[in-house]
Length: 116
Length: 113
Image (cartoon, rainbow over all chains, first blue to last red; front, side, top):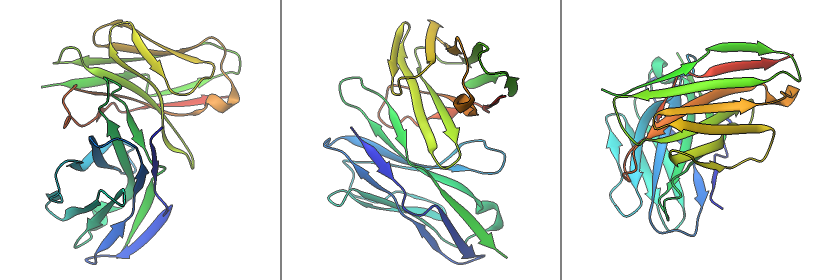
């Protein structure tokens, strides 16, 4: 079974600095999708960025980018120029696409604090 | 545009009482549907998912059940709630395509007393 591990329960970063959140996953599949979601205090889940496993190029969305290392099964999220609004819980997620077993598994999350 | 509705927003129920949480999606057909529970320190735990009417996959055997009586309706139920059922429940949907992200409802805060 697939698992997603976020080893950093909490992190802090100074405003305007850069921070990297780590995520590793375990799978025997070669075709899958990876996501990062943000959950602010409102508890609404917001998609931050997504990465296709068969694409080597790292995804980028404005200040958010990923470092996808398929062989190492690592999918870290880098937030540049951190802003106060980035304070939230961040979840890494894995989507399997095998045999219509279309489920999405999340890690336990990393709570990110932005220091003014 | 597609929207997802989940209700109620909050619920306080005594131990042993039944539960019914409902989720509906508008603006799309044949969505994949999911129920997640978020408890402190455990992240988002996948409870059930469905790729079609009457097709329910359970990830966590427990006293909860799910049903999909209509294409865009997903119901989470329990006959007798336990204290450990307290948590924040999220319904979500996506399309079958590989790059379709999850779209979440606003969640239900369930407190079992």
